[in-house]
Amino acid sequence: MSEPLRLGIAGLGTVGIGVVRIVRQHSAMLAARTGREIMISAVSARDRSKDRGLPIAQYDWEDDAITLARRDDVDVFVELIGGHEGTAKHAVEAALASGKHVVTANKALLAIHGHALAEAAESAQRTLRYEAAVAGGIPVIKALMEGLAGNDVTRVIGVMNGSCNYILTRMENAGLSYAEVFAEADGLGYLEADPQLDVGGIDAAHKLAILSSLAFGTKVDFDGITLEGIDRVSIEDIRAAADMGYKIKLLGIAQMTGRGLEQRMQPCLVPETSPLGQLDGGTNMVVLEGDAVGQIVLRGPGAGEGPTASAVMADVCDIAKGALAPVFGIAAAALKTSTPAHAQLPAPYYLRMSLEDKPGALAKIASVLGDAGVSIDRMRQYGHEDTAAPVLIVTHKTTPDALNAALADMTGTGVLSGTPVALRIEPV
Image (cartoon, rainbow, N blue to C red; front, side, top):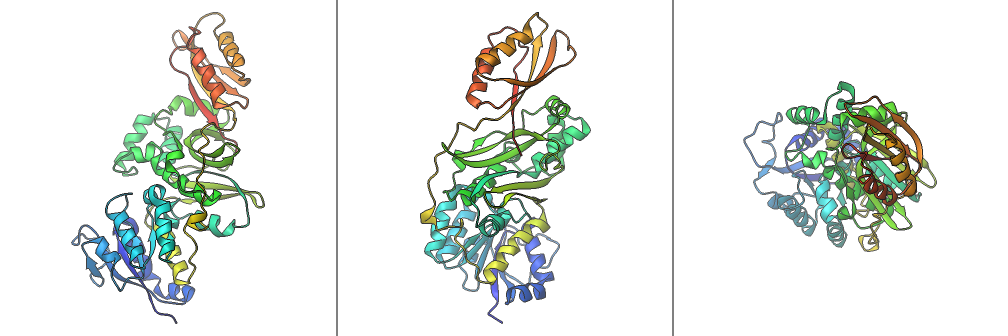
């Protein structure tokens, strides 16, 4: 059997302890599957005295993660600190410069600095692996890099933040407002310390940027993502969407178009009978589409100790077996600089508005849509609320520019009560 593979683990939170637990409990299995022993040389965290539920005194302790990254008895530096600047970034850079392989669960680090780190890893003839950075326990990175290597990937779409999916599902099932469920989720510890990372779509957009690079052979471009969170989704929209046969999900979508790389993270409607429409609670789902395979659906837990630590160990095992692929599937020098395609492909849209109780109000709205080139697929008008009537419209496929022009012109009709809501309907 080969020499042991020695790990240095920086960060002993939920995921870090999960990795320690797997190494301790499954040492014989890991050795049998990789052909070498996997052991932990040293660890690092902010608080040495904290009770983590597992004994860690047998491992050397480093107060400084950067010192840990440079240790001679560490072959693989496992970065589980988090954050795209500061200690996490400097420690990963130090590990690569010292000839270590790196495994990380840090999506923000890769979304912001992924290309530079890929160049550093390849220059050092080392690998940087990150299965745990996207969709927790779902092996979507391996699917894109290996399983679909013979495909021209045409689209990546998915629910990539379990907290947002929990909020939207809970709103629908319990009939609660966004504010009520947000407070509930925050109280249960489902949201980041900065909740905007979750509900603002930032966390999920980090993951989408990584998947886009892998799928389309481009440099990671987080700034090129059109980003919108779920804070403007109301219980009225969820009920109305359900009445029309749809569910609302925070979707990440990436596809290469004739205008460039389209990357979006935004709330969309999906058919309730689709795999994404049936996804409840905190589960993640990623749908991959390729010219040879067609469509595949990957579903599973997107966070938590076990699932995320499982993904970390998958990368560790690949390194133990000598599988040292380029960071983003192809050499960093071959990754293309993408052109962001902010003009999105045409799609149908859901519109919800309240119209004043005036003769011809609905006709005026239909006329404005028609003048902008937006045709109506179906429409429903509900009972009056005081002096206004709720109206739902599903359009045929149209461009965002045409729809936005129509929405702007509606303000001059004098029949709107409040601001219309428009949500894209994504075909899946």
